[in-house]
Image 1: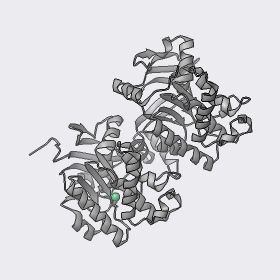
Image 2: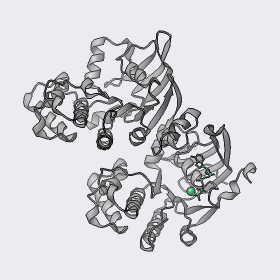
Image 3: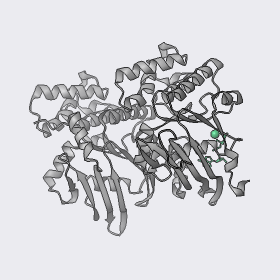
Image 4: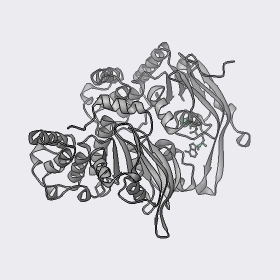
Amino acid sequence: MNQQLSTDERARMAAHDGPLLSVRDLTKRYGQRIGCDDISFDVWPGEVLAIVGESGSGKTTLLNCISTRLPATSGTVTYQMRDGQPRNLFEMEEAERRHLLRTDWGFVHQNPADGLRMTVSAGANVGERLMAVGNRHYGQIRETATDWLSRVEIMAERIDDQPRAFSGGMRQRLQIARNLVTAPRLVFMDEPTGGLDVSVQARLLDLLRGLVADLGLAVIIVTHDLAVARLLSDRIMVMKDGHVIETGLTDRVLDDPQAPYTQLLVSSILQV
Amino acid sequence: MITIPTEQQPLIVRDLAKSFTMHLQGGRSLPVLANAGFALKAGECAVLAGPSGVGKSSILKMIYGNYAVNSGSIAVWHEGAVIDLATAEPRAVMAVRKRTIGYVSQFLSVVPRVSTRDIVAEPMIARGIDRQEARERAETLLARLNLPSRLFDLPPATFSGGEQQRVNIARGFSTNHPILLLDEPTASLDSANRDVVLEIISEKKAEGVALLGIFHDLDTRERVADHLIDVSAFAPAQAA
Ligand SMILES: Nc1ncnc2c1ncn2[C@@H]1O[C@H](COP(=O)(O)OP(=O)(O)OP(=O)(O)O)[C@@H](O)[C@H]1O
Ligand SMILES: [Mg+2]
């Protein structure tokens, strides 16, 4: 069974014409401390939302709650499944949620080691997700894996190497290939360019930007780097101390920030 | 008087006000525009005129959605319906940018590693034009702007300032948006390339595009403008 979406299917999904993901009144407390407080927003198919803010502002907490990797204290997250039905993620069976995470979603971690299996080959890292959606034909899996490695600019001859032998930039590109191979509709990214040097970052950003546009992915990306948000996102949500401070079209928020905190954030960056 | 946008009059600005609040400077308020109002007609080019700092660029940026609007409306004819850009949701602004309002500037930041040809073709592809055809049209436009064809395959990161400007201009003019905002597209171009841009503007008018531009050079302004919009007339009382 092949669960990858054809263009037709995507068009049909888009015709459902509703948000892919709806977050309502989402709150996460760690004891007394607020992780994120009363957050609501929608993400539509093909839309890229950047969550920006300083370290400790609750960005990652929010991302982990939405992606059900962390239990929320209260609130709901509704996701439009591939059959067009909206489902409350917090009421889903664990097995179903895991299936979603492995197939219809991607999660790109800041540290590639968190998203890759470091002791199996690059090809197997990509192939594993294909097997999770029911692919069993070894030759086909290897072919698709090779194709994806080339899309993320990893040479085919490295397919049998373990990611341990890869540079940071290559590992990150491998993690992206692993996530995108099942044609997910929604990808979460937590500081995907975080640990990389500037030139490697630039290359990764170009690659991501191209893939997101070509595949029509919806993305929720957490970053403290406004230049990354500028380059990749359509919309921005600015967070501080677990609260949403300002939200809007990316260039509007960056060119004409309204909230005092956003003005501070934008002004402390030399060139966005 | 027509107050709702139509295909013939696709953009109507009314009572537009803009001020900036500088929270980092004790919340100081800088009023820039009050009661700005004008309309654009299909097939004509209106030019925003007035001294430096009067708010010309701010008007373009509010229409394109880069700047927030304090009050007033920016009604646009978008695919057979009317949208008020002053209050529209980000998604609606994105749809208007994709289909209805294009922005021509020399200074759009370009993506470093994408080929020049693809940078120019990208907005056409996003609007559903076949990739091959979009690339061919991109080449034609770049050639018109006298960019050597040996540069088409290269990313513009290493180009001269003037070459990069022409890539951005080609990108801005490549689409068939019914409304185009022109942010000083001819500034610092040599006269041959300036003439090409003026020629493209004439063609856009003939195609029925409604244009709104900023041109500092008086001679250029004379040649393109069907109307002048005196932005100093929209100065807020406090600033006058
Ligand atoms: N993002 C911003 N934040 C704060 N103030 C701004 C911002 N953008 C513009 N201004 C101020 O608004 C006023 C109008 O600026 P604007 O750029 O619209 O003028 P202009 O007519 O385009 O001038 P020029 O002819 O010099 O380009 C100026 O006082 C400017 O300093
Ligand atoms: Mg200006």
